[in-house]
Amino acid sequence: MTPDKGRGLFAVVNISRGTRLLVEDPLVTITPPPLVPSMGFSLAVIEPLVAEAYAQLTRTQKEQYLSCHEVRFGDEGKDEESQTDDVASVPSGRLLRILRSNAYNTRDGRVGLYPLVALINHDCRPNVLNTDLWVPETLTWQRIIVAARDIAAGEEIVTTYVPLLADTATRRSRLSQYGFTCMCKTCAASSSHEDGTRVRMRQILDALEELEEQPAPNQSPEILAGHAADLAAYIAGNGFVDYAVGTSRLAAVFAGRAGDTETASYWTAVHRANLALAGEDIAW
Ligand SMILES: [Zn+2]
Image 1: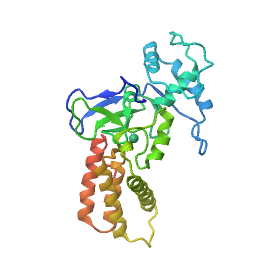
Image 2: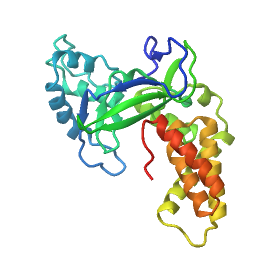
Image 3: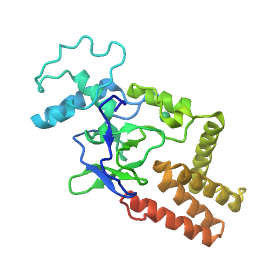
Image 4: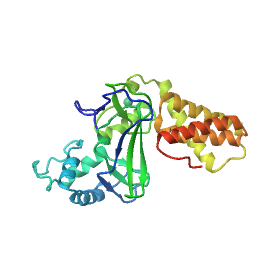
């Protein structure tokens, strides 16, 4: 998943917004133990789970697993047996590093490896929506990649690995777990003004989500509706697709609470369109 030369997915034809580029079932799904506060998952506990899941794969699936990029830090893997071609005897440490380098969290707290989706490189200004859909028939989360804007032939397909409502230092710090320093255009052109706006928008988002659950009587519904609309417009204007569904919904909810039915129906329409892009039906 690091931006190595030769990796990455590129559009070979012009692609219009809303086109589904990839729909992929997980090769492996791990159910990790509860999170250790501020430490994330305990990797020592996950390692045997990964080895167990890997052991159940067919030979072809194992080859697919091992084809995924592996990020190593420092001396990691130094003491492991020298690499063999035998897919059946791969050190569990390597399996774990591959999972760590490529996995996506599913909405119900599991961790899935999607080898094709894993080929997509990161950019702080993604051009696809990267989401998951529950498939009841197979009891799995399918990963779907949808063009979030028109993409020209030759353009690289890029997604984001980290939440985008964060300043450049925070994004880069979170991206370092994938073994690279983000040098995308957005990072290169970052300014303290833009970083400040992202952080402020994140704070507004957090506050609105809390107020949606627990309305505060001393807050003016009109002012909150204004903040929610500004936030949704900022997200749409900057193409931060991962926030589009949530923020358009909040803009509709808070406009409704302020009694502004015209604005509420506008954002409801936007929200429906965002849900449709993600392959989902309206939830309320
Ligand atoms: Zn970047």
